[in-house]
Image 1 (cartoon, rainbow, N blue to C red):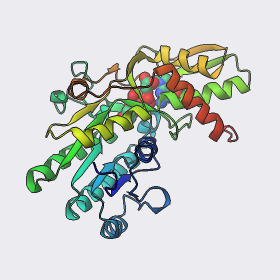
Image 2: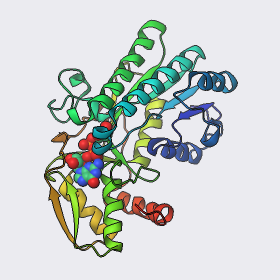
Image 3: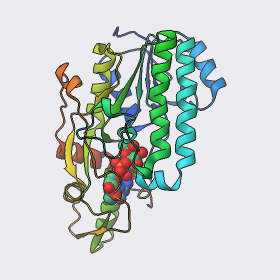
Length: 313
Ligand code: GFB
């Protein structure tokens, strides 16, 4: 991509979006439209229309859309589904009408069937029921993929769908109840350390496994796909680290410096027993992750300390 291409990262305030904007700037892309305060509310068609008319982006990374961990998906399915459906339909419609040359839509690994063969391959999409705890949100992300396909089929739009592994990193939602597992455990382990608590509660059995990818590596994968992928199939954005929740909790408490006990709370849901992606197509194109898991956790905690330790959780 030309370094002066007009690029719009929709959702520049999200975990993915922040990492992408930082990467694009570091890679010398000088024409990022709408980053930060100038970004329109993606659920407001009039605001998105005016923005596209004024900036005419050539490339769009669609990272916008509220997301959260298993706790938020159980407590606020309406907001998660409605926000993502509105965001995706609004931004894709404007991207089509203003002739965006290439768009990468970030779906989610939870859109895969709960019991699909692992590691998850795109051929499994739509072959079985999704994990119930995040079904509303997952259905919205699945619909976003299908809408990208429809625009490609009807109008020839180069709208690509990427399915990321579970991502973590700076600028995430670190709330104890709403965040994904890594930021939520960082928050709670940090608070437990400050309060000299004897134990840290970990939701579920600790046995589920997840593939985690650092947000900076995910951003690199998104840029790589935008520059090199011309396929019509969706593409998994993984290449991350496969680890059990129990081992994640041990790694987080080690990085945070919490020395108490872990207690696994079986009254909380485990969600999908396993989520790991088959990212062979991406890896065969030559993309590789760069950040080791523990180093990524340490960078994430360092960011948290710089930005969050004044709040009361
Ligand atoms: O990251 P997480 O909320 O999302 O949960 P999913 C992963 C696993 O971590 C589950 C366990 O087995 C949780 O029970 N866990 C342990 C915790 N302690 C905690 C904690 O303090 N907070 C949280 N959140 N989990 C998400 C979907 O599923 O995957 C989203 O809900 C999104 O919609 C995301 O798609 C990629 O990986 O289970």
